[in-house]
Every structure is written in C-alpha cells, then in structure tokens.
Length: 378
Image (tube, rainbow, N blue to C red; front, side, top):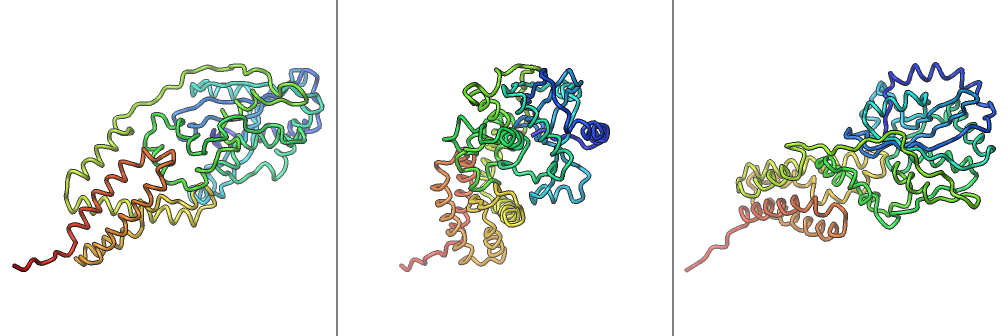
C-alpha cells in the first residue's frame, strides 16, 4: 500500500491543521463531491498492491483534499522491530489533490476516481467524520495486512458514515487471500516465494474481506445504495501502462538452477549448507510466529519443510552419530510427505514444489549415507 514519507507530510500536516480545525464543521456546498481514488500498481515493495484514498472536492469552498490512511513515520524508534511485530502505528493525513496527483504522475502510476452518489447529508457526514478522525487519537491505527490497511480503513469510514455495511466484497469471495495476492507479484519472483513461505494459515482462508485497492474499486462498481448505484462509473485521472520488471536473478530460472545444483552436486558439504539454510529459516519463522502480532504469520505450517529440527540433524551429522542422523533424516522425510499432502491444494504448491523435491533428494542421501549396513555372512 502507498506509504507517505514523513518528511513530505509533516509540513502538510502543520499547514492544514488550522484549516481542518476550521473546516471540521464547515458546511459543504451543493457542488461538493466525495470520491474514492484507486492508485495503480508499482514496482516498489510498498506499491505492489496499489493504494486507496478519499478525495473531498468543493470548489465553492476552495477545498480539494485527499485523505490518506497509508502514512507512517520512518523515524519511529525501533521502526523495523515494530513493523515486524505488528504494532507499528499508521495514521491518516491529508494532501492537496494537486500534490497527490503530481506524486503519482512522477511515479508513473495510474489513478482512477469513483464519485460517490450520495445525499448532501451523507457527504457532510463523511467529511465531518474524516476531519474528526484527523483531530483525534483515532487518526492512528495499528496496521494489519488484511484487516486494517489503507483500503479497509476507507471502507470502514464510508460504511460508518452511511450507517450500515453498505460496501461489501462482490467478487473472488470463493478464492483464498493467498490466491488473490499471487498475480500482484508478477515480475517479482522471490517476493512471491518469500510471502508463500512466511505466511501461515490465515491467508488460506477465503478472501471475504475487501483488503486490496482494486477489490474496493471492483466492489464499488457493483454496489447499490438506496436503490441506485453507490458510485459513478470509474474515471481515469492518470493512465500509465505498468511495466513488468525483468531481472537476471529475480526469476524462476535462478531458483531452479540453484536447487538443481544442490541435487546434482551430490556433495556432503553442499547438502549440509542447504539443510542449514532451511533450518535457520525455520527458526526465524517460529520466532516471528510467536513474536509478531501479524495473524498472517502465525500457524505457519511451512515449518514442516523449513524445520528447526534440521539443526539437530546437522549436529548429529557433525558428531558422526550415524544412528540419530539417520533417524532425523527419516523423520524429516515423513515431515516432507505430510507437508506435500497438506500443500497439494494450496495456491503456492507449484512454487514450493522444486524445494520439496530438492529436500527429498538431500534427505534421502543423508539417510543412505548414515544407514547402518547389515553385514553379510558367507
């Protein structure tokens, strides 16, 4: 989602505070319009999924503002730790519409606008609620990838102002969150792989909530309110063709080459390095699962592949304890079988399959090397 750099927003906040204090109870004119802005996808990590914001435009009162729920402060103490833990505070800010558009024009990202077809009272209520949020502690919220982000917060403020659950998801409710996310990673293979293995069971639930900008855009097109469409047809304010990046390393081919090397090398050192990497990733997944408040990272069954217990296997191997090395190799082959059966109907099965095959080859080799030979008596 769109993240606004703090240094660009601080001045805007200070400048607009006095105006907002005045405008909180300012009656909007009959010319006022409130619309939802959907911003196109980018190739930076924060922009993979697009962005959502609300525009309030009232020429009679010289108002043309964008309310943005996607801001955070890079200068927050322990920023990385807070982001990983899931208690980083995001907040809502405002931009002059022209500045907002200039930023997306600079980034060459499309912007679409859907004007809400609502009564003057409803427009006023949305405007008042937005400004009330800006001037209260409610302007801060704890970011959650699915449950609380720039899109879901826009849905919440509009639904609250319209006194009902007006905007709901209209399509893809039979797909899992993981399946919905996959197409957004085109051209970013290792990001797709990384999210595939770090996300747990929550993203395998059916995606019944609106959590992505273009889901909201699509739902608004199909939503009715008081017997008529809630929003006008989408208008394109900026149009750019998204360029899918190409990289010599960030692609499936390097992934296959690296894993193919591990399989074909048939080398004890290579096997140990591979298992060490998997085990350390498993330790990380378990630690993050307990440490983080992000529900998406909890209950991560991918630890059956990235098992922390592989560290014990490596210790027994280094100590040349063949019996327990063999037993742990067989144990992890059983883990691998269970993991494969569990994963077979999941969206990320095929992207993880080469790693499953590689782990199978390595573990079988370790088991064979350490299996106690039965003496033959002639």
